[in-house]
Image (tube, rainbow, N blue to C red):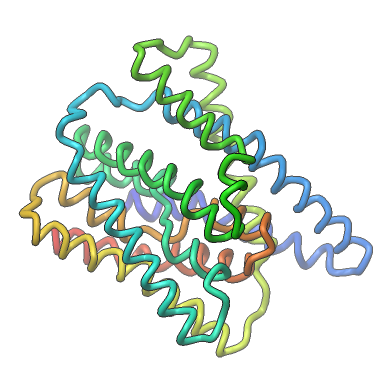
Length: 297
């Protein structure tokens, strides 16, 4: 729990900084300039920052280890995302909103920045490996099926460079080409910069919401975190998955919404305020969910 609290302390201040920036740019001219900057940065993130980050993540992942033992994790990711779609459909029906506005934050979890460190601490080296496999599969699903949902177009999958960078990184990984020391340092610097900036943008989009809107956010967080946990738990029970693999599936499936869900919602004019609120509330709810996961494990 100390690690979890430490991670949240490193994450939430950036969201708060973004929220403060909203207040400072409340005047019309400042607000317009700030919004223009956000729009430019979203495009910069989608076309350069995120693709390069994912490229290095795929290249450096330990794919050659225990590759034959990852089928359970792969099918778990697909199952959790499938039921996430059903949860998002149910959420949109209950609150009478467009499916594309709420889909991504409910379907896709933070499988990297939160999940991998937590799995490493709780489940050791094997936990790290299976968490990385989980993240790779989720990333591919996020920028294919997820992108199709939020953009409404199959062409967008091929217009954004993320998928090409991801598969090129996997190709270099499987061919045995190693990262040089210089590139490794660059990837670490990129990783340390990417998340804080995107979290500031999340905080910038947080707005005062009505009671009904708050209900929508909490319902979304419940579907994302507890819904994901329940689906993963049943999946592990049905297929008799135990040990570290079970722990990784339960923990990662119950993580809050991915920061990239906000980026994509913003890019394609879906409800990015809902996404930012889901991320923020979900991060706090992690303190409640993690003990439940460890008990079920």
